[in-house]
Image (cartoon, rainbow, N blue to C red; front, top):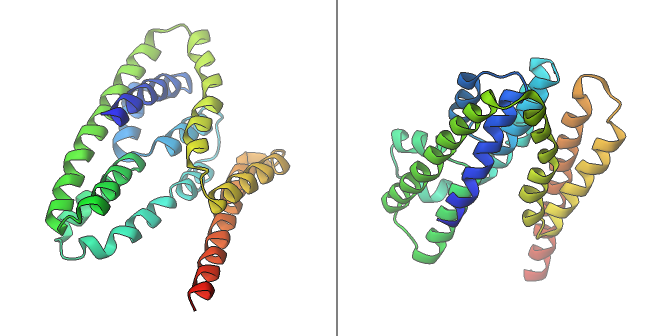
Length: 224
């Protein structure tokens, strides 16, 4: 329930911002259905509004979503016995909030693969359907608001990203990743076609992975 309360405002703001960046209501809702990744959707909508080349938009959102590979990898051993149909459904619903709920419950209860799949599905349906509905509501509101009011919502983007990123900065790899990406983004800001954003994302992920590998190596040496 607490996560559902947090999802709705983000969906409303995304829907309105998408309209403010010259996307239609169908495109805004379609993005929430197909992409289904809040951070990438906010970035994608902003880049679309800035007339960024499609290839840069695709690559940038892909890099931002690379964390989903890590989510999937952490669940591989738990869901291996499931059918391809189950795995496909769970892969679609693999978003930050659902993953957090599922992995927390699994670590506490040691769910069987089928129990995990059903819990995953129930959590996913609740959160994802709310994301779709709130996106639609935000898009409808954005469609009738004056252009100045919708444009003003763009100033909420830094606050939104701060709310998403800061709570995650609990470990050295995450902190190094965020700082590296921020510094690189500032340095590469003058680059054309938003290339600086793509480079910053790549550098941040690389720095985080390097730091994580160093931490793992140190732990292995201590155990040895």
